[in-house]
Length: 412
Image (cartoon, rainbow, N blue to C red; front, side):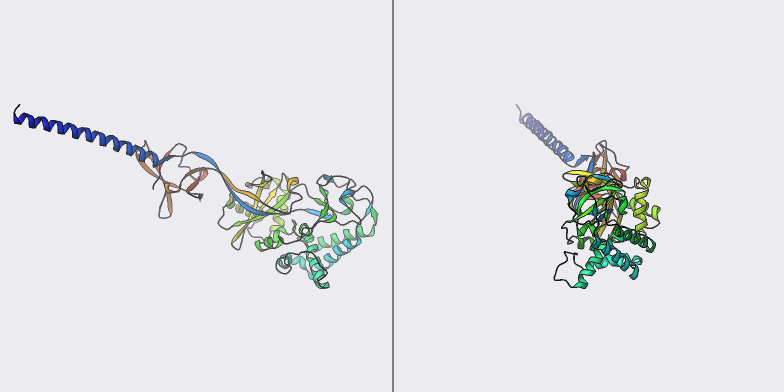
């Protein structure tokens, strides 16, 4: 074989080896590209997103109580927590309403009228919050003036929201009860609620934290009432079975379910989003269930069960937001609660959850890059509801240009 032929053969072998190497490298590169593509893309899938916070929930009940001489829970004709009406005797025998109780209530109303406190109930709330550090038990170390002041603040809470005419009418009712000693204990005869859940005890917190006080609260008030004494005293108490208000605080940057819609509805119902007309606002929602049904719902957890309620007010207070809700169902579940440390599901909606790095920013806008046919890229403007760790939460309702099973890019 000639030298020239051997050289050609070697060249052919080298070309063959080079070709095999290129094919091998191409296979490796193709596999690498496929791996990168798989790890750098995702498919949009819908899921239910729930934002849960832990908070103290304060219950503002529409309730009545009255003190009766020598009364005990055992004297009730029904078990505690039972629903009662306004016409059935609630005790097994006739009893006498405490004269000291009636005198204290009449004296409280007289003081409200004399000082014209009915024109500025919010100032009494400020006194509860700032001057009396929790309204703890009255003690023998207190001066007579201190004791009178604390007693007044506790008792006055029952009459918040009443105008002069209503206060005079209430005083007349109490004097009528005062004139009759031994009697059947019947709600209608005592000018109490017409029906509700009956209990044999009441405590200072329940006397202060009432539905009447709700229109005047702020975050400082909620913090201060945690210290109010919750030691039960014997008294006949009835909690309205129709509805129940509650309030809790969240950080100012926490988003609550459809909170912009809540503010729009409040303005439509009462003409303002401020607290100026909150007495009339809360009363109207109690009477107009058709209005209440328009409000968004969230859920509060008790004993690992979720209970739905309506979000009816959201107010800024310092670096917090106060969220006010109303229960129309499950009232009996919370009727004897004052403060409940628990979980609140403040948002619940259908969403797309994508890695945080999948969302890019240009100027003031955020985008998700979609892949069409696996190759063609298209940026879609998106609205991120919130970032949860390494995930971006995109509400389905806020992102109509996205759809399930669409492929998107994830960037390192």
